[in-house]
Image (cartoon, rainbow, N blue to C red; front, side, top):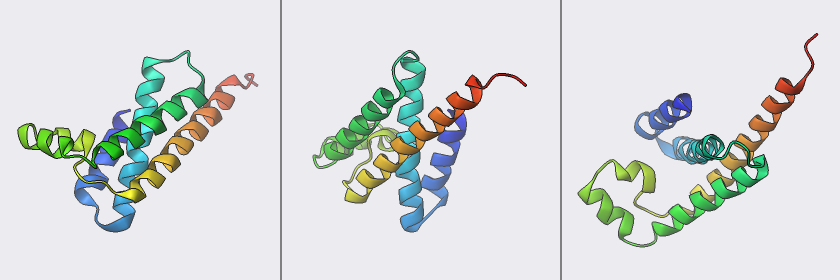
Length: 117
C-alpha cells in the first residue's frame, strides 16, 4: 500500500501534464482497491474492483459540487482525497486503475496458488 501512496504522491507533486494526471487517477483507484482488499479480505476480487471504481466515480462526481473545495479550504490535505475539480478523463483513469489492480491481484493469486516445485 505504501508504494502506491508514494508513487501517487510523486505523480501528483512531481509530475505535470496528461501523463501525470492519468497516473494519479490510475494509482488512486489502485489504492482504493488495495484498501478494500485489506478491509474485506474474504470478498471476491471483482467485488472489490467494482466497489473501488464506484467509490472513485462518486468522489469525482462530488467534485461537481463546491463541497470538496470548501472542505479543502478548511483542511488542505483533504484535497488529496477528494480533489477539488471535476475532470472527465479521471473517470477513464479510475476504470483503468480498478482493472489493473484486479488483474495484478488475480495474477498474484495464481502465482501463490502454484504448487511448489
